Image 1: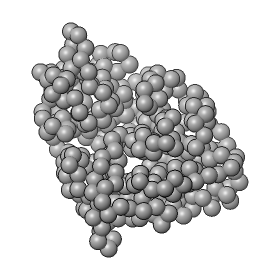
Image 2: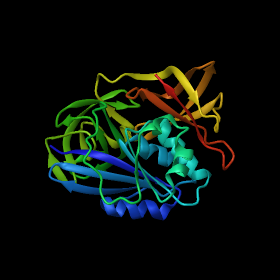
Image 3: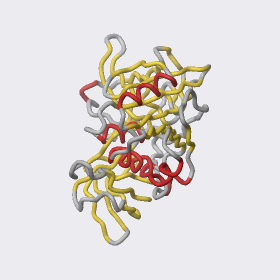
Length: 301
């Protein structure tokens, strides 16, 4: 059964992200998100990068939310973009952080030390490989495409962040509808099951494309689904939270929400159902002036 690890590469230098990705895998998909793979036995490494930064920070945040490892490249001349990307990594509290830079260690610490999650990170001058890391089971499958294949039926693609077997029944969001997995493909090979961290294609049984055209996730029945979430908020002093519409990033998708803050508590309200699979939810405010961080903070549940 295939299992995998997901790595995202972030940098203010778009060419540098491609250079690093080329060392770690082979380019396989070139949609909104570029996806590189490296396969060893049943282990598949997926490397994600977006070419839309700094224009679209939500795209970068979405790939980061799928990853357990992030590679952050810091150039010799730092800009507001490098600070914003560091804030983004901190907001997600990514488990494995690798910083690539030729900057002096003191300069790097000046930038990163104010961020709590950077109390531990790996510093390198260059990178040619990373250790094998298995993704945790979060009880959901992130979906990015829904389409119809002649002779097969409705097919969805995305990343499995849980174990899934053929004939298993999952809940389709935002429809709150049960669907059955008819077949599983990984790298164009049929599989009976798949584990966390793997790019997948699922054929679904007895459901038409138009019935789930806006599908975002397939989740296990025991995953908690909410439209209102409360927690303790941490606001970055460099950014700002609107007492109104912001975005939260939930495992591959940015979701518009209203945020109500009272002292250190916050309540987010969404029109769309949110799978609650993480203890920390980053908040982004994309309506700030250029040069001011769009990463506003995060909520701890």
